Image (cartoon, rainbow, N blue to C red; front, side):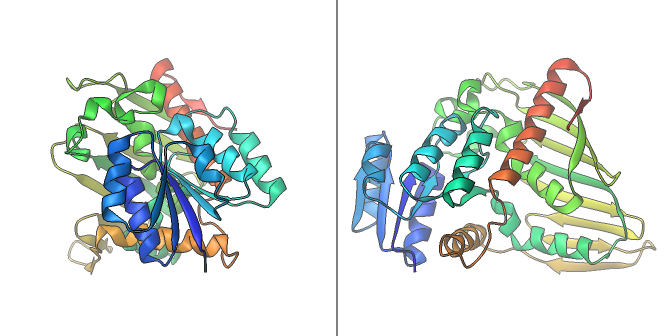
Length: 330
């Protein structure tokens, strides 16, 4: 059993993680945030929790695990401090907003025997997991095309917060839809394999008061030869999250709100999988897995090296959008 954990950053996802950690039996919880209102909200909802305003004060408690849920530009420095304090680390996606310091973080974790996991929670969604299992089983033959889409109007993401103050709206904090929706990049790589080149058109197309891109159309060539088409935006006024895998022997189509449709050869041949779990189930499954990794019962499904590979694809997409050229990945 893991006895102690700290959550750095008590916004919506940080508060979710604190509640789920308590639900999973972690008794000694530590919460950190510079915003007194967030700390007060945590104290109201969770009993017997220690709260601090600084990371150093929290790490002085010698917790076993640290969950980092602050803006991406702060991830690496806090993760390094947590590793130095002897904790295993879970970083909310993306691992960072730049590659600076990421390789050093990976080396420090590996040399000290610490775990660094990255929070791509859609891998723990029952629908996405079933989609991958079907692809791996050869259900549609060799995958040739993968089309993934995510869209949701940015002011609707956190209705109680002015979207303009969130990190999502600011380049210097690691915002922008490419990094924020890098879930799609991660699960496309998980299902289809590594990316070898990226072309991207992206920009701020709406009137949202942000200094980052709100839309991106990414075309990636996979090592397998397949093509991935990934559309992400913070403009659509209704939540959309889908993935289609087109193979030689049929098509699989996953929708977040309904499940999977398996289109077999022949226009009338279909099979339906209704998979619509409670959204919190994937977060619980993700934390349950991380705690098992801290106990050394399991190996992280998404470790720092995988997180770095996803970040490289996101950075390549930004470079391509700026240059208008295809960007190869070594």
